[in-house]
Length: 309
Ligand code: GLU
Image (cartoon, rainbow, N blue to C red):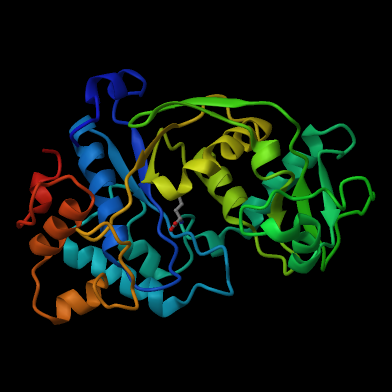
């Protein structure tokens, strides 16, 4: 953890802080997940903290039980044991750390958002399709295109078959990333009114993750830099949901091949199952992931017990 100031981080956290590893079972575990897990377990151990495992399977269209089963098996094989959210409990049945088991919790959180607004005005029904948003977003449309506001003043209620959006007003969100330093984000310009539940009735990542970090009492969010741009909107949402103290955020570098290219699952160089089948040891997998995320100068075996180093 070369550039991480652990003392400064510890000073911002309670004793035995809780962090979390929150994969989405939309595919098999790969080296990118392992790189993230190394940061999570390594920093938690160095701080005397705890790791919560949470399965973020809010998107029923993309998550599959076989991916979940494989993910749990691969984590066990790697020796990455959570301190909260036990793997055995997940296998035994419904669990408060599997998002698809927690619909009632998100319903309740949505009611809280509606109640917190002036007559429910913070939240509105939205019947926009991706095509509507793309049309208004013009040539620049991509996943990060801000919502153009088509349904903002249409007064649509919340109903089956409609999405639910949270009004995001202008304003800045400031935070100090434990690795990247001071950040200023403007969620209204970045994403616009935030989708909470989509037209199929699926809770969105942005909503579920904030509700969960709050109810699980997460003190420290450690995740890849690909999620850095989501942090401002998540801070805003957390406050609207009544969160008194936001978590500290730490975004770590994503893994790349030594030549700088992103690893791809298709090229078969990152799947943990493939590496296992090829006879690679857990320590070699951990070491390879640590090297690819610049925590080691060269690949070597890295035992789970070394993670606090
Ligand atoms: N579930 C997300 C993912 O697998 C991670 C969410 C987060 O760490 O905030 O990419």
